Image (cartoon, rainbow, N blue to C red; front, side, top):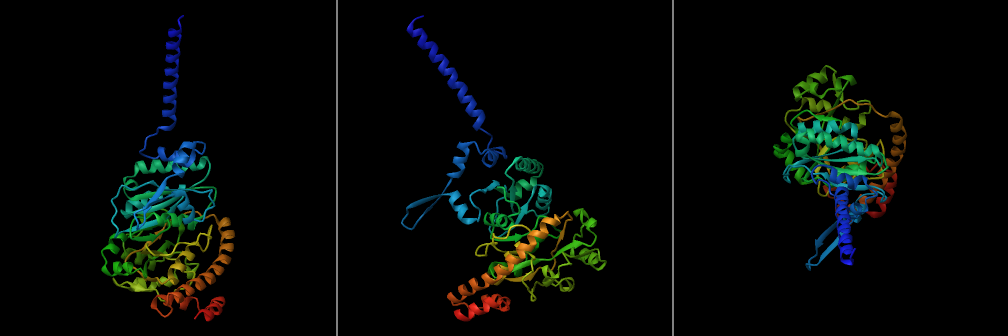
Length: 415
């Protein structure tokens, strides 16, 4: 065989090998960019170095006043924004809602686990407005199964596709509830947010009622008011399993309340919701009224202005005091609470992991005591430095923190 013939044969073999290699690469890396399969590589395929590098080197750019452009990796920004140790992977907008959102709207901020994904679809169908949710994905095969359940639910729910922004936190840390809340809040795309647990069902036309109420919108726009949605649960837990049987308006709710079929949410723990003043709510007309008996364990479900509001302290992991800490800081930062007169939410019954809750609540109660002292001193120094100590905005702090002795000693030196 001639030398030229051997060269041509070698070229053919080389071309064939190259073509097969291209097909292999295409099958490995080319996935559809619609749906979830594209993103699932970023969440789970740790050995896929190409995808991980692409994700980790996504840049945020901005221009300074001299028109110079600067860039920073999004991973660096997220590591500063949240208190994770670098072992967590945060993916904003794993699924982005199709809805064209307007700034003057209210985004529900919530957290979802795999067994609550049906609740999320139900909430989207009822609320018909923007929802920003964080879903925690465990760092194993169970996490991938969670994404499959999520994908299947979204494919079946047009409301999920239209209204819900889904953000993923993937790590081995369970119940980092305030970190997850902050992720959902940060990536909410409207001026106002509503902190809501996924187990609650909004029985009234909550969004429309608030957006069409001039007084409610004026309070929200001020940035110094949060709107409370009264929360209820069924007296017999089995009656709260089917949301389709829930009262559909205030009149039905009052009848059920008077018949002892429903009651204040967690009535066994009065500080949690009693400051809402349920008796007054039952007898009020269409008037929004202010909460006048605030105390530090109060943890209502509220709507407030996103921009400028404080973040949830991420030291609180697990059950107990995590949401109370969010609402305490919101209150003493100068945001007062006002109760909506006709809207309400009802808890959908579910099982509680009591043993885990008891341990976590014990440690979080101790942390909460320290947190309140620390926060009162820190915000008092801020108000004094800004010469706003005698401003009405500091009223909540001065009244609520007055009984804390370390705060009293510290402030006496500052003022």
